[in-house]
Length: 361
Image (cartoon, rainbow, N blue to C red; front, top):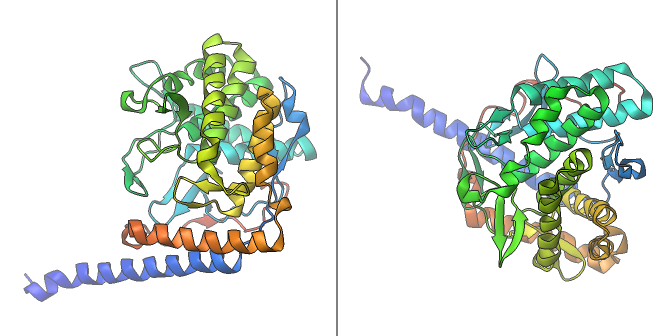
């Protein structure tokens, strides 16, 4: 048996290693935010997606940087983040699948179609039927989000919405009855309050669907918007009046809460904590325009136009850039994010090239 110094040596080294890795991650994040900040983002709306039976998703890009992706040996993506390591996020898998489907519809390359169906199979296999008859796609890992630590298994309106959109298109493509059965129970969590194991929450009596249950309201905007798109897809396919009501209640809550996300009529807030990074800002604007078309609520399009990066003057851009860097780092200091546990090394698994342009990726 070794002495006390030998017993304590490895934990000390482990702590030093974790601290070193945390500092490296922090430096890389700051470099990206300060030196790679850009108001342009390669994501676009798809007009064909507005047809009720369309296979197209509402957003598409052939130039996304899949920097967090680690493909497993079967072609299913894991997402690597400092606080989780490489893990399966159902929403990430659904989004990757929808992008692959978008590639197939434009290029007719069977490899893209097979990749989409592979993601669908994973989502089907990993669906969880709860005792309350709700079908969910949980995150089976803990995730710190500001002052809240989401404990496994946790669910998310964002994940439900994106998975629903993927499975609706898979059903339209394959007509496999198993997919329709999953979809019929996928909206149940939108009826349930967060305290009841759902994703529904109220802001001054108005309905919101939350990406991170237990977090501050109104929450993360793009996650809420994505969940509404998923509910619309489900209603368009099933014509279930309960799903239609959930969609309309969510739209009403969105219109009520939009001023809470508004930064001086020119940008949006992310999770009530800091100015949205450009990627999220562009996504917010695109999804607001999509939902304006689907719901016929012009107020949503007005916010999309108001927040468009294209409208910013040079002075406005300077304000947004400095405001983002300031508020983001104040948020880091407030929640001491550097103390969050570091999982693994960012290079441990198969990493996908930063610029995803090939026909099979």
